[in-house]
Length: 374
Image 1 (tube, rainbow, N blue to C red):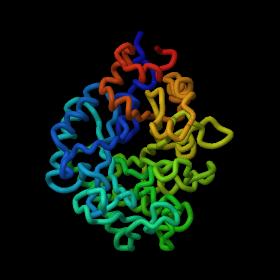
Image 2 (tube, rainbow, N blue to C red; image 1 turned 30 degrees about the vertical axis):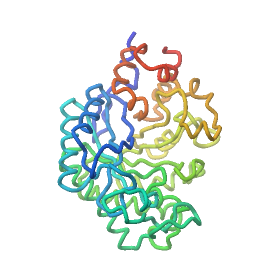
Image 3 (cartoon, rainbow, N blue to C red; image 1 turned 60 degrees about the horizontal axis):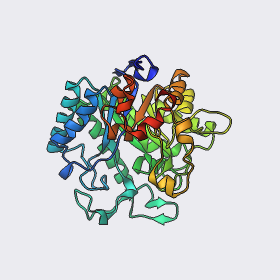
């Protein structure tokens, strides 16, 4: 039996980018780039996934050219001659295997701490919209108007450089409590200028980044925006509490030029709002009509270690997180693309093994997630 004819493994043309299938490799931080330079091993890592038929690869977060963009050691940069040369080798290796790849452009904001040893200058503190990591919790530098413009320009230049070395588009990291998301989130954005205010006002920082990339990189260069309701600082956080609020949040971003929304959730099958089974990606698709990527424990039969520690329910994984559930939602046109993280991290051949029904070759953890197929 072969599963190659299921929707997940069928090609898709999204206008600005055509993919061999609907599988996206989710961005996953790796810390394997000393001095911010992607190595030959990084190129081999991504090329293996392209060789094994991952439709679109989104790289690990790669830091833009700002003194406080980085928050960890051995994180790649998307600026400087050596780092860009390293990424160009990654792009060439992926393209040689017939794959498509985009970098995730990243600034950690208030997550950065001077005591973590993050380069290029470990003594530099974290920068954030209002000097907060959570409401009423001071954290280093509140960005000035000049700082805001400098970071916007750094994002734009990172996209320009990405295009010049052959990337197939870019993804802006606007999720999980990092800098762009800190502008979105009321608890960390208490600014009283044009980059603060209500839900729409708080999109202005991202909007200016997106508009700038569109102006410099052209209409045919794909721009993906990853966003989330949850934060590392608060798993129960909500940018939008209702579909109406979500529409208010999304409209300026669509108008600015987002091509694809990457809707980060911890479990893809969980409903976003009461009264509907749609997840976050499903709602974004319904509201905007734009292509969307869903993500959240795809290919897994258990949750994060911290979920277990916090006594979050695990029982729903095998039943609701199954391949059948994913395929049903794809057939219902709730989303176009499916991002897979830890399953692809563990097994570069996951796509081929599942599509060819070589399920016996998967580890027991992945087998359970495939439900009745196994």
